[in-house]
Length: 246
Image 1 (tube, one colour):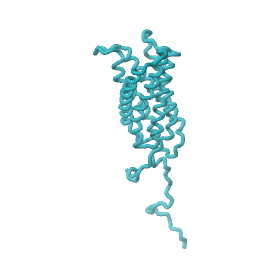
Image 2 (spheres, one colour):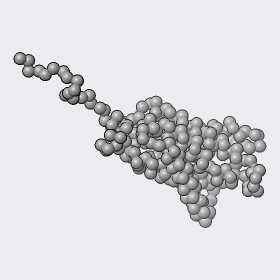
Image 3 (cartoon, helix red, strand yellow):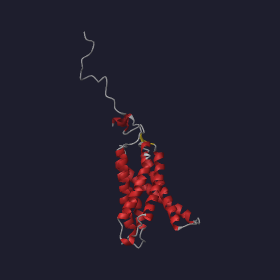
Image 4 (cartoon, helix red, strand yellow):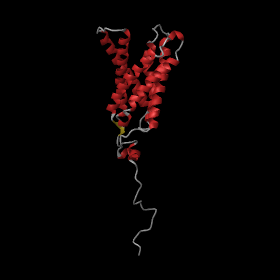
C-alpha cells in the first residue's frame, strides 16, 4: 500500500509559498538603497515643485496687492508655506508612497505647511536677534548669511512636521530631519547664488517666469539630492498581526 496520501483540495498546503518581508511590512526593511527610479522621481519632483512654487511666490511678491494697502511681498510671505507645502508636498508624498505605501498624501502636505509656518516663526525670532548684533562686511555677505541661515531654520520646522508623520510608518526619521535641515540650507544658498551670479533677477525686465523657474528648480534639485541620501534610512515598521488581517 502506498503510504503517501493523495492530493486533496480540502487539505491545507504543506508547503505554503513564502511571502517576502517587504510585502508584509509595506516596504523594504533591509535598509538598502532605493531604486534609481525612485531617486530620479524624487530629484525631478522636488525640482519641479520648487520651480513652480518659486515662480508663483515671485510673481506675488513683485505685484502690489489690488485689495489691500500692504507693501508688495507681504501677502507672498503669508502664503509662502501654503504654496510651497502644496506644490512640493504633493509631489513628495506621491513619490514617497512608492516606498511607504501607508503614507497619506494629505497628512504629508499638512505637515509640510504647518512645519513651514513654524519655521517662519523661528526665522522671525532669529532675524530679531540678528538685528541686535552689529555685523561688519558687505551687504551681499550679510544677506547671504541671512538667506542660508533662514533656509536651515525653515528646514528645522518642516523637517519636524514631516518627521511626525514619518514616525507613524518608518524608522530613521532622525536622519531625515537632519537631511531636511541641510537640504534647505544648501537649496536656498544655491538658488540665491545662481540668481545673483549667473541670471540676476530684475523685475523691471518683466522676467517673472524664466529666472524663478531656473533658480527654484536648481534649489529644489539640490534639496532633493541631499534628502535622497536619507531615503534608505526610512525603513518601514513591522506591521502587527491585526494590521495584516485587515
